[in-house]
Image (tube, rainbow, N blue to C red; front, top):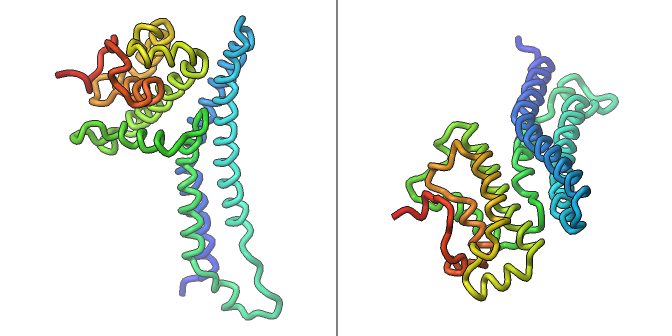
Length: 246
């Protein structure tokens, strides 16, 4: 006869192992982003322009909050799993193993969902319009399904999306007057060319492996954030883009 207590312990061990396995990779990504944001903050502090510190500080704060949230959920789950509820005094032996397994399954599911915590926290607060636009960006081409890509390429897409978005937010924050004039005169790409070139160079360097995929996060967030949805305000887009090829 199977030992119910042993079966429950095996289930808890499996739940903890699954939670750790599902969350270690996202936590590592968030830790890497925090490290990069901290390095950017240190560099910005040495800049001659104090305003350069704010974007890096916001990114570091967001990454730290994301990492803390993921670790908190994971540690709470493991603590509960390793210290199951005690059996009430005087209860019979059957009651000691009567705890339903579905509670643990639901808890494990909640911990697994913490893998997407980093996707919910961005460098600056998002509006509903931006969240909707991000969903559109990930499905710009009907035939392109990111879910069909290998895991490492899916990760690159998520990073490229965030990096492009943060780059445009930084430019908008640091050069508000030029962004406003660029919208009015429909020459954003020309007016902001120096900053855009620097951001694009870094974007190409980090995401070269997916540049031929039919999405262009750099262009998308330039339109959404700098041009406020008006593609014509960009003027002539100077970078190669798979979504603008005819």
